[in-house]
Length: 146
Image (cartoon, rainbow, N blue to C red):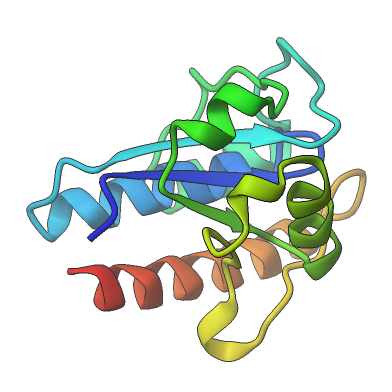
């Protein structure tokens, strides 16, 4: 079982914070104290979660207002056993930048072979759609891990 999970998207303000907080909650519900964090390949460093991400998460009982975006770096890749991304190109990019990570980088939607589109600067309905995919994918990972 993995002791640490890193969830990655582009800006680290929409999909990966939703994934981080959902994965952490689901893990705790399963009795795990696994470390869950997130980062972005092109992070909007220092920014909070997108307002629509905050809204959708609150509607689902999770407060992500404390989130602060950070850039993916070598230390984060080295210090996390499992790295979950939203799209295949992100997997390829992480493996290109950090070849030692091969075998530890997977799609969050791996079990459905499902990529999760970026809702950034789109409607609330797109954030809800992303949330639903992220939630289902996090549940599948937690079922596999615990």
